[in-house]
Length: 195
Ligand code: GRF
Image (cartoon, rainbow, N blue to C red):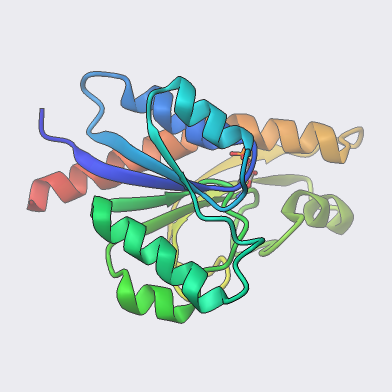
């Protein structure tokens, strides 16, 4: 079966990466993961890649003095794999406009709020503090704006009075793990149709 190639970028636990890995294991799923790129040495996402037999490349942002050179190393690695889609999954670095000048193929991201509400860091806390009674997650195209690219899919969760940061984060993550594979499937099929 013809499949689109995906490279995932992650910085931490990698539960969304895992959800994509699990989805890609299904024979009829239209995408396959070529590699994981991380910017944090030893993050759990890289252990998950090892367990799944997926190449994992660490380009540590912490020790890279020159941000431009660090980002260039990411671009160079992507150029080597040349994936059809890049999926950000808890990648805690902002990619600069220069990145998007060099890398013009689709980049997707998952964000733990119903964008355009609660952009940036601590989206779950922002939702709790604002007193809204629902939040959720969004998969969107990434462009040079912060969490501002075109929205592709969203999933809602209700916020109960007793919800804490932990319980809301868990509720949203559960939805993220369903939403991201669904959206990647949709975009992969669109790409395969025009390939
Ligand atoms: C998720 O909440 C995702 O929406 C956000 O970062 C978190 C990553 O979690 N961008 P994980 O590393 O996938 O478990």
